[in-house]
Picture 1 (cartoon, rainbow, N blue to C red):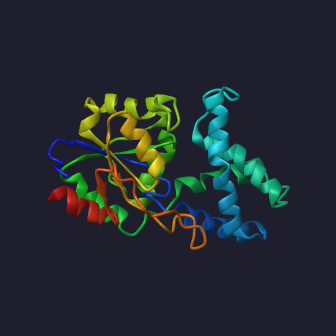
Picture 2 (cartoon, helix red, strand yellow):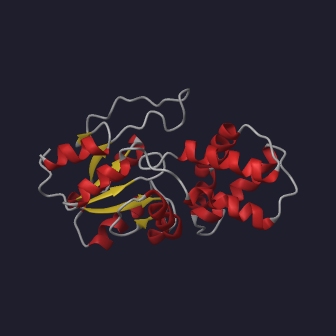
Length: 237
């Protein structure tokens, strides 16, 4: 595509920029060793992540008032600890473990690709994660964001249109000047409805080797790239 009109790239983060499953599994193993606990930590990570959308839906429906993702993760952690019959942990211990989501590793191409893209474009996360979470994760994983955008600023979780539109407005741009980058096709289709450009970067290993998504991209996407370095190659041409 002709990317000359695009001024900013905004990114889905969980799964697209960072490998949450491997990172949470690793930290779960470390948490287990430190606290004398045994569990299938891959299954633990999957279960914790599976609570993500149901808890956000409680905010959307009004069952919960606006609640940021750190707090939703903490509620979900309580559920998952119960599922795995892990009891007796102090509140301080659970609060520290909840910060595992602030310490997620990027995919190998994430930081190199982002640094290249930063030469030409404004870069920002467009995540359901709150500002503190995105800031700490960016610092931890070496992600060169120019600013932090996302659901907390809009007080709407994706795929609500307000979440994408608020990012565009805060950047002082028009929707067609902003490209949404994601590994999740529904995220891109929702951003397109607001007028944003779209770049699909599949991450087939996001949910592990036994749960690979359909890699066939929607034909409406402006760019399809194999990783962030490939995305930089295409947008620099």
